[in-house]
Image 1 (tube, helix red, strand yellow):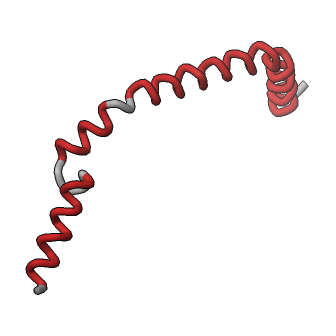
Image 2 (image 1 turned 180 degrees about the horizontal axis):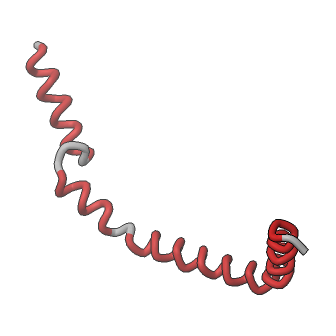
Image 3 (image 1 turned 90 degrees about the horizontal axis):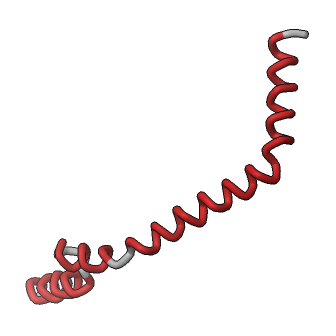
Length: 71
């Protein structure tokens, strides 16, 4: 009885792709456009925020550095 349960468990894991590497590779292969989209959107957000807040952030940084190094 115990051997049959192990066989069923291993079969279920293989079907889900948790044991077989080929099933996992096929499932993850289609995810490339997802990470590309996330990367492009993140870069777009950084550029947009930098364009809006860049001068203020530069002024804050220069003021902070000036206070640390002296007048």
